[in-house]
Length: 491
Image 1 (spheres, rainbow, N blue to C red):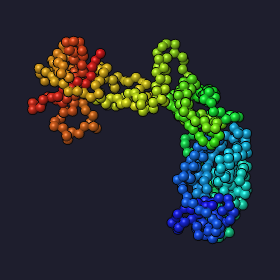
Image 2 (tube, rainbow, N blue to C red; image 1 turned 90 degrees about the vertical axis):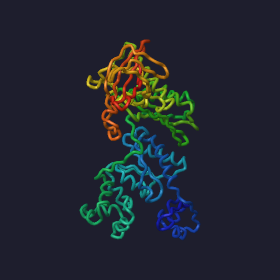
Image 3 (cartoon, helix red, strand yellow; image 1 turned 135 degrees about the vertical axis):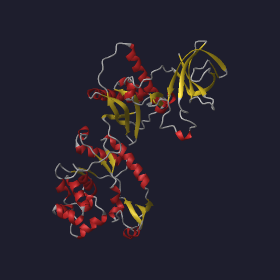
Image 4 (tube, one colour; image 1 turned 90 degrees about the horizontal axis):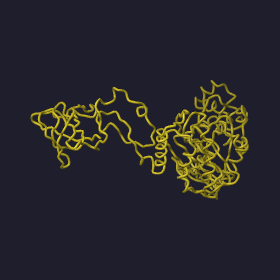
């Protein structure tokens, strides 16, 4: 059995199973050649999109071993799919490197995947050993890269096919033959690509691997001797994970902003639950309540064998003295309420107002998610230079509404105005306060005269004691009647 890919030169073999490989069929062969080698070969069209999706699923599943996983983009050169796993500092969780590799191989086999796994201290050596080593599982000792690679073909250096063929014609078919040459001669004769790949495999040059997802700042895991499925058991395990994680966050003077809880089922499926907080938090009880609201629909399948809790976003959170007054407790209670509503309804459905740099009152703030972190200008008191010199109304209308006014003289406050068919006689007034338009938003070419966008605000009080915020749009002109608007109300 083989999958076929349509390339520029016609149909070629993309991948083969074990029987086809034993018959001599290799990825990259033209389909006609493959059928000549194995007349009974059955073929199916390859599906690179589905292959990539499957590799992504396996990479997510491999998070049970390490958060540093990535898809091998060079794996398609020789057929089959590949994954990178950086297990630095993780092997002891599974009883050592050999135990980890055996567990990984056995689980992949149970899922129906054939695998070849190699472990080395450089990605280049691990890639070559996984592809061309005689055994399906190999562990290269630290510092043993040169000896392990010596007998492998130069294709193990991830070289382009034409370059590998040219090296073979020159009698340099093995990596050991190439490594024995002087470095200068390799660079001059074969180019920087060959020299770079050789140095990466031997550890002379670093080769960073970017994980598919950002590695979490803090991460704790819990594996079970027997798979669990009851919600009560899941909550008990979650409680242990939260206590462990919050203790680590407290030691580091940090608080979680976004947490991700991953469930690894025995059938290979992975389920994630994510919660967020509006401010850094390391209270296990509060975080447990956020997760508990999302556990009702959890599908445990045939059981959960591993749970991993990761803090994917954290912020500094220094220890503070407990507040004995009610003010601090009220603020904390409001923060927890916002967190619960945001996780239940979605961050985009729970909003708050944040300041914005604008002189126009209706643009001085904007609605943002209540779970968004506070900016510095929201937490620090404003300087006297930025604060308005006159009081501002507590209640602003969404948009200024036009009113009819009676003004005795230009630049004087109104003595009477009509708003929404109701007439108000002015008892007292104060003003004006002039607010100029934002020059980067106004187009002077579209204005009839200079000062048409300015506003003169007045604070007025009617005979009933109600206080309003009115303004006149633009300056007085003999040929144009000014327009008046009501913008807000004072308490």
